[in-house]
Length: 185
Image 1 (cartoon, rainbow, N blue to C red):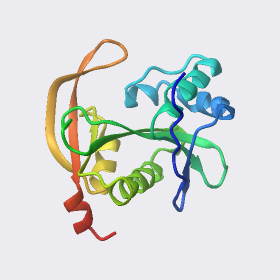
Image 2 (image 1 turned 90 degrees about the horizontal axis):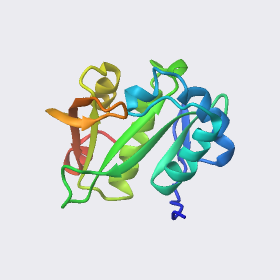
Image 3 (image 1 turned 120 degrees about the horizontal axis):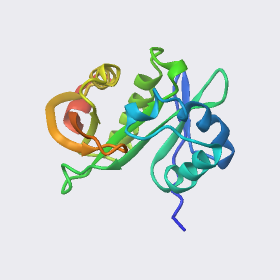
């Protein structure tokens, strides 16, 4: 069995980031089964609530991963988490990744969630660098990265094997702690 990772509650104007619960499986499945959501974040659409429960138990609860909860409805509408950074293994860095229910796209939800996690990463975890990688044609996520202060580093060609075995390019972004503290926070 895995070690459950505790995540702090992070509050914004539109969303609250909180720990996942097994009770969230139905809400996760509701948006994760949508073929527009998972593939954009690098994973296949969920096929059942049982699969969503498994993802909560085995993935989300075992790392720094938050449920993105809509303040108005009180239900999870996405996830955001931190993974080990593979390009900079010798410095204190992480990679942020997220997914948002398609019904909530274009509302600033991802930007607010990423901003909350950026603040946590630099002010609490004292990271040296935070990265964000997206497929080059994911314009919405590229805009989120730029709005949150990340710098485009370039395209890492043929660098990511997706769930469907397609090898894809990745657009790489980073934010250094020196840049974060130079920003208006």
